[in-house]
Length: 186
Image 1 (cartoon, rainbow, N blue to C red):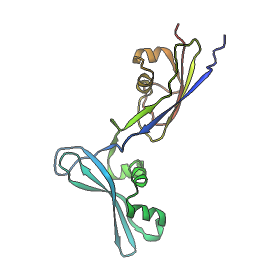
Image 2: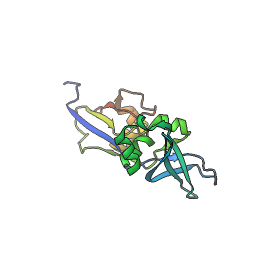
Image 3: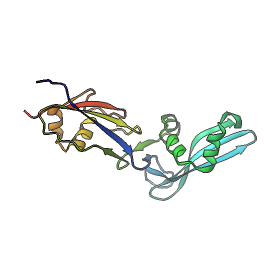
Image 4: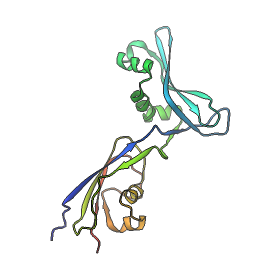
């Protein structure tokens, strides 16, 4: 009897919408904001550009600006990217929102609650052989592996800790791919 898994299942964590921003509003006590439809504001000051991502407070609907570029020479920005800013390209909105440097500069964090889902293929796990699962992330969604595995397999978290051999600590938050093995029932 071999202990090598004979089935490899690919799981993918995908974004369903843009995450909310944990950002304090200046008008109300709310600490949540959204990008809504995702819009940029581009302003030229001589030969220098300012580019902001507009966000809206969830409670009072006040609009604020997140700095994407400040006082950048026009030639320093790729023309295709500049066109994306003018056209409010949604992929560009997502990439700028998920950029950790922009988040640090503007002092916000992302709230991924309800903004992602796990895509898993159907497989029978009642076989005697172990099953290996490879988890991939399309976006940097922070999630604890034990909770993700419990959701994907329908196990309790205690059963996950008992039946799973994982290549990362299962209680530490991850936002990158990892693999684990589901051991057979004794």
